[in-house]
Length: 244
Length: 244
DNA sequence: AAACAGTATTGACGTGGATCAAAGGGCTCC
DNA sequence: GGAGCCCTTTGATCCACGTCAATACTGTTT
Image 1 (spheres, chains in turn purple, brown, green, cyan):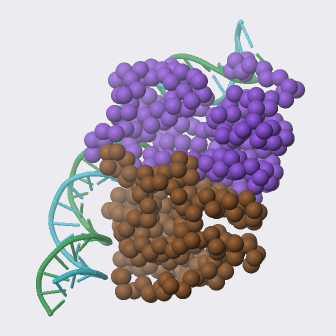
Image 2 (cartoon, rainbow over the protein chains, first blue to last red; image 1 turned 90 degrees about the vertical axis):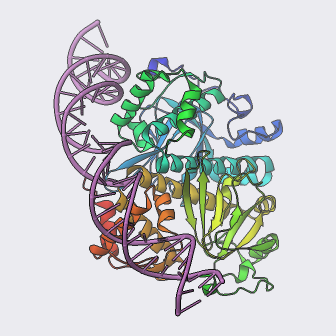
Image 3 (cartoon, chains in turn purple, yellow, brown, green; image 1 turned 60 degrees about the vertical axis):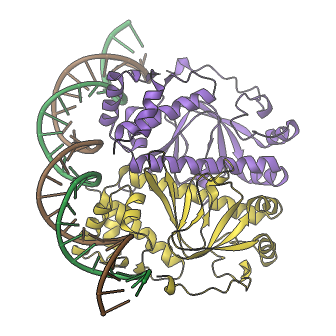
């Protein structure tokens, strides 16, 4: 898999103003002059290899991270060893917001593939967002969006059946790939069935069976991690027409 | 029930600086001078009767709300009618953060008893938090805390059994009552079994049975909505010693 | 004080997803 | 390019919780 990832030349500083993710990321809504100020703040970039931690639960919180390339999962681990994936993050999305509240991270962030993040020192971000109104507002929107997303996951975990959960997951992935200029109907999942299951509150076998069922019904074509969505309206119908 | 709520004299302006909730609320960490500035911003107070909405999903977002008296639930409703309680909020906690991301609220906030909130116009809050560093930071902490809380709920919904969920819920309520100067072991729940069930991803019958089981085992004394916790360590044991 | 409606408890039974188990396939790493 | 391991699929069985149903309680209304 490593060989599929195009090599990024780190030495060349890729400024926010040049970044093709700026419409999805923190710079959204800033004017060119403001983006330059943000650029100065984004001190460094960090490469994280597949399966490595960007941060761990308990680590001191110092920065938030914008994903420049690759993807991550976040998870929470209980004392007795049980763990739960709380989210999957793609390029342009921000990681680390959980750490603000206690100055320590409360979850783990792990790369699903070789990845790269922009490090945004948090005290400097607060400083700049006191000066730049649009940055302040965009940051608040990003935090709020995370809260809204979490509510959606609660809905999913609390009141949907297994196949509904998987349908919602696939539609969500499709929508996020689309926003990044990729195909809405064909994509490659970077996480395992076990990780999907953990996120959806299901066992990996149940996820696998649901995929098989979707395939039988002609909703998707599944080949391991390659997904082709054949019937988007069909998947949406699964979600809304709850036969209860 | 209405008659139990002490009458609050609205005409007397209760400033943040005088409010006994300030340690739990937005003013936390501000110096007296800064609190005065916050006071000017908190334009008005609003009384919400039991079962009434503070805001509805879809409403324009203009302000966040700090609970001065009473308590609320928030819920999300799907097109097909299914709904899910996403949280219960007590005095000093902040409502409405979900609205920042799209300028529209994405959930409903409903009073569980006759309640009162402080209305904090959001654009003015952003304005002031550009000037007052400690306010900015406290606000960010509050948003982050909500994200961390949501992750805990995901953990609960995704990987705990019914009795573990209820134990976690009771311990959480106990801890929050304690923080407000009430008894850690004896309190009155303002929500129904159905609402608890919705929050915990369980049916009301399952909640009721779990309560009965806890009672049989001497963990709690339950009398309708009156709860007396008899064995806190026992409840905690239920959570951590997962017999899987 | 009686009547009501909403809330709670408890029992009997059904089922969706978990668990246990085994085999096959595809990555990854050397 | 091959060996090993992790990941995935599929089947058989089990059980926790949901569903359906009946009864009882509590606080509110009149």
